[in-house]
Image (cartoon, rainbow, N blue to C red):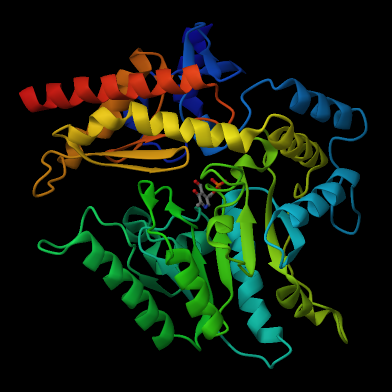
Length: 454
Ligand code: PLP
């Protein structure tokens, strides 16, 4: 029964990133099935999936073509291993990914989540310098952008700069240098947005130049820092990082885990600034959000450092039991085919315009500091006061209250602190995108009014 499930969930399931006591109090829905762009809980209540099931769902739930591809693959084999063997869907998917990603990327290393795709990229970059043709170098430092989130493994936490994570695991992490994020809302008093952005461009140049011969790689979420609160980078920033890293022979890792597969309006965010990274991580939307397959793509130059001449000492010693899972690869191939068949990128661009229009009223709301948007990634930052910007007390959990109010109205959202994130699936139909925006606006108005009155 639903009551029994609730009890067992509370008794036995340790939920990720969740304060467990708060979880017990809040009666979060237990999802039983998904259909189209809706989720249904064990009581039969329907919710619009406003965050694409953690930013990964692309075409909706129970998509006939993806379901059929998985079932067909199940009729052959569910899993063997890539270690020493290969599999048909993983080969076909690798070929497809190489065709779709920037031209210089030719090799696909399979992993199983965004964090492990990043972890692989970091280790590849480190080992690359030790084995590269131009002579070995011991580069141990990694460059990153303030506020970055690249996953929860020790390596990916090291290059992330979420304060909460560092306060707990700091002593286990390796050393990084951090450049400021060119996000402009929380800039020092008296500085203009343009000055603040220029300062970030200059600081990136100063810091990367200063550590040019020590950096094993520089990692960036292209165009949008997702978990930092949908921080949209100004035009030219990614290109700037590419130029700086190229100048010093530093591999650039593009973490396209969140922005890849259509979220910013193009298949990959790097396309928008014609940037060719040396390593690129994809996950979330790769399988249409169905199954845990991820990949780290590498350029020929990086890969050549691992060619086994004369002995096997150059091997990349990394790999997991379930990487390149054939069911996941079959789902990914079906999902990629649907992008073209259903003109998903055009739909995404139309949905982005609809969202911008529907959320316009929030621009003047006294408790909305900023509405940030790139494609269909939207972050609405709630503030106690706009001028000067003053955050709500964290103990009030205003963002969280908005998601509860949205849930009552029939939509699932997930806050990042006091940033309310809207992340519809790229294929979501127009009328549902409109409904999602209406629910978010109503929930924000209700909650900000009630906390003001309190
Ligand atoms: N990189 C980025 C940019 C992300 O947004 C995330 C997850 O949100 C990750 C890496 C980690 O992905 P995963 O949760 O699949 O490990």
